[in-house]
Image (cartoon, rainbow, N blue to C red; front, side):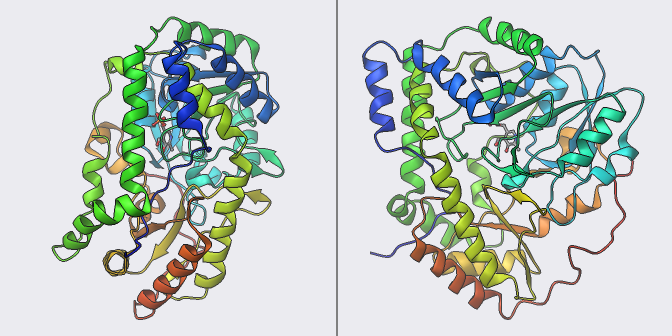
Length: 430
Ligand SMILES: Cc1ncc(COP(=O)(O)O)c(C=O)c1O
């Protein structure tokens, strides 16, 4: 049977699903002791005092924003290249997102672009450790301190990554994490708010505890949906389901059909009812087990990324990721700049390798943020990137195959016109 390689792989500790089901069927699927245990271990993993589990990563962000009690209409600086829900949740919390351009090498928030976005209404900045690459935190934190701004780290992609030997999520006033299916720690949805500030933690917890518990049936539905999605992206499942569709589509234009599987970009005000729920005990059971494997999984993705960079760095049509010095990324995604991204994607799927087109959004370009639109030239260049599979579930032989195929199909692509280090104008402009 042919073996294809899906762009995603979900992480799951052996037996985790069975243990979660056991919790559900013993009446501890919704409430139970695993939630507190997971929160305590998560906080201890970061060496901080408070972790509060939430229904989504975005809700952790929302509770942090509410907990900070910022005046209505305050401005909050977010990277132009991020998942659209982040600036949208800021709006739901009554704030105005202001987009800031990203660094041309790491695609993370560029500290040099911050001053141009500052106004007297700015109250917070959100460094996003995009694709598992830590942002340049020292200049960001220093600048934020100088202007008395809160720093809220978006660690949705970066659980376990370090900057100068310290874990991301520990640099700001608070941080949030996502436990969606494809994230570094998968509990089939959910998120976590992290902070060392006792008063902020108390306010976040009281907001979280005011939400209703989900029903056992909806927890079961979440696990079941996650399991089904996992089947679709497993090597065998992908080969007989999505792969033939993507393969045929590659002969009819360059549309990314996976876009249909993503969440619809939309206003989130009022918040959907499913957001306003507590995190369940069954999910926490899975999270606790996943924490035992996190370092191993991260090391595996990091090794695979190292192997890809080693082999692909010298190809003129490609530019491999450039992590900042003294950082240890976790490679949630392996982001490659390509001279002809559509051609690379098309040729790869015809060789059985599925490549991710744009995992996040160039937010100022979205109609949803028409009123916040600014020109952010570096973030806009992310349209030239693709993300290669680098997840922990790959076999080493899969990675060698990716190397071989990408080398072959990128050989005759035109060279990249500009290098990442080039000096483009920094900062978004109105
Ligand atoms: C960069 C980033 N931030 C925040 C989130 C939100 O996480 P969640 O989907 O758990 O709400 C995501 C989700 O993919 C993300 O990619």
